[in-house]
Length: 114
Image 1: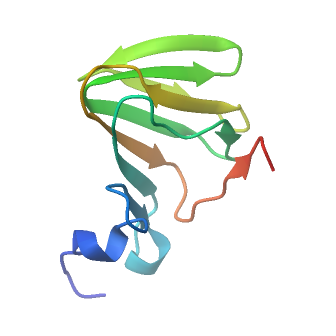
Image 2: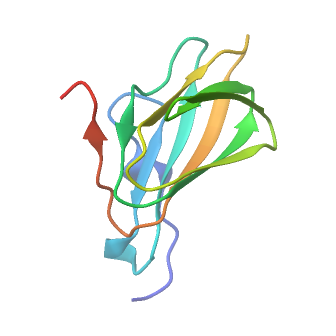
């Protein structure tokens, strides 16, 4: 595979500001979401059969991991073990930007509501 930059337009999730990268087609062993949410926004409870690592780039996130609730700010990192229900919400007053790294070259998500 030759080196290339992947434009954000190829990774954008619908009309949202979130980017979704799955590594397998690019020869990468990871996948990620680069999330940009406004106050009150965030994904519902879900889980993966692999670990997920979040780094807050901007703002404040309230993160639910299993039965625990954490508050994370810019620069903070949280890790979720495989098969643990989790989700987060922008509980700050401004934009939340979070990098969500999936320890898998494809994303596998199970939503609690499904």
